[in-house]
Image 1 (cartoon, rainbow, N blue to C red):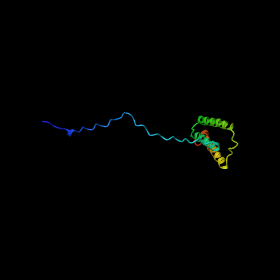
Image 2 (tube, rainbow, N blue to C red):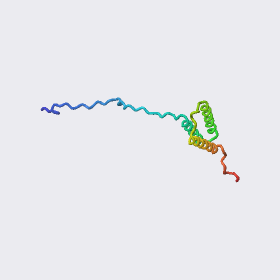
Image 3 (tube, rainbow, N blue to C red):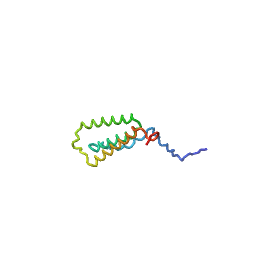
Image 4 (spheres, helix red, strand yellow):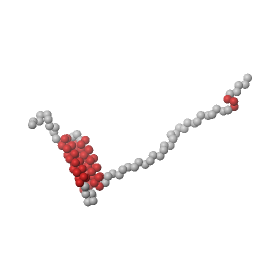
Length: 119
């Protein structure tokens, strides 16, 4: 007795599995924003110092930040900033940032009033 299987057609072989990852699509180059320069750069740096000082919780942190601020101030004072005269708005922003730094330092460096304080 003869039994025929499949009518003479061969079974399709499975697709081979690759053991390597496909090549990823190229990633477009990220555009890195240039650091601000001139008065915008100075104001941005002042904001960074104010943020850092306002995160301080002790005198050691305040001391470190003010030392870095002083060092930065000395470095930029050596540069020619004659063309960087601040506008009234920029001067007001710098003053407000300086006041914010000062307020944060006072909060950390001033002993807490309240307990045992007399009017």
